[in-house]
Length: 472
RNA sequence: GGCGCCGUGGCGGAGUGGUCACGCAGAGGUCUGCAAAACCUUUUACACCGGUUCGAGUCCGGUCGGUGCCUCCA
Image (spheres, rainbow, N blue to C red):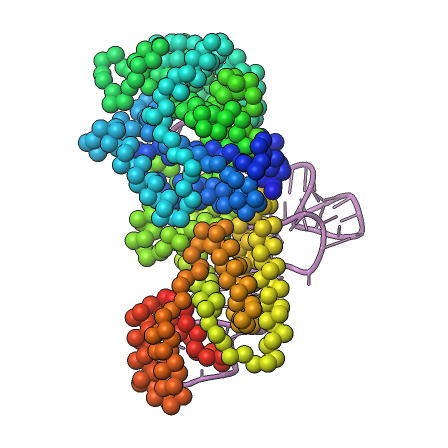
């Protein structure tokens, strides 16, 4: 199985440390606001990663963190605390805000049919682990303390700039911030921040260095190592994390353990909405509720997400969501054929043999496409081709069985719900009655029966092979 | 300014040098009691200019354009 590795900047073969187990850590949400579709794009993509690992015969162990402690608004460790800010906005405590958005987030995972990670550890439940890790870094001489906190000295970590290929001298030229002459490098970052002397924070803890709260980056190192060991098979996250968060995670973790932190780093690219990037500051985030309010299903959103590759900067628009919803609708009607007996003409028997071949071919290409760095767009086109063939030739008894296993496999890998249940005998009876009415040219009765079925969520299309139903 | 990425038909979007996937939308047609489908046909798509090659959307160089990060952000 091949995955593009940011570390090596090429597609690497996955070679887990302890196969068949594959350890995965993905950066989760900071729970201080509603996630927007851009966030969900990323989580769906990691869901596909996990499902593909299972397909490839691995046993993925997936940990995603919940950042419920307010790291500061800026990577330069300046400014406001996000959770405290959210708390003020909503007139709640930081703890309440964190709880509310954590629940919202896990609910969203279910709504989007995203595999539940094996663990969703919260930063606030792992303060001690973070303190221990900072202590370790302190013992090894990677830290220094200034007025407002304990910092990581990036100059002590020789390969700090390698991962993101940063040019630290040129970077931020003309933008050099004055850190009260207390920070030696702009790239240094906080491991532990002290509480302000004049104010009590909602969230603060005692530490060997004084009362305060952990820096943003340390939680991921501490929790991933606790649950998955010193070296991860795969670490994944949004592409925005590459230059700062992930760079810092590597610096902390590798300084502490002396071992590689992750073998493969994967980055999900951002999406744009109407050509603009989504950002908190622009306030153009679309939520799941916005999607549903416009009459689109989250399943359509899911399919839309799969229509682009995770490494490309994809575009979101209502128009393309509409296209995805239409495509899904067509898929549903073709999927419903799995339940339907059709009167075939003899000449089609040969086609049915080809149908079986096509469907088995789809199972092969499905595996190939996904294991090739999660090429979902290519897989979708494979599905379309096979479905087109099914539509054209209809199904025999044999091919129906194969088709059923194909639909189940697609649902399993893509998290769609193409396999719906069969309709009831009563509904089949209604269809048969309508067919008789049509044969008698009793159009009024025939149309009434059709309306009746529509009310039950069943659509019909009349073909030379009889009336075929699909779920509306 | 530094480090990157990208330019594919109306829209979205794959493409690993060798008949330019696929979806959505549009147009025309066949079929059809109506409806819905289905099927067929359909517009010189690979930003531009050079180069390498028997052959380039695919490799190399340049030009133009867009865009991301270097403040928050998946």
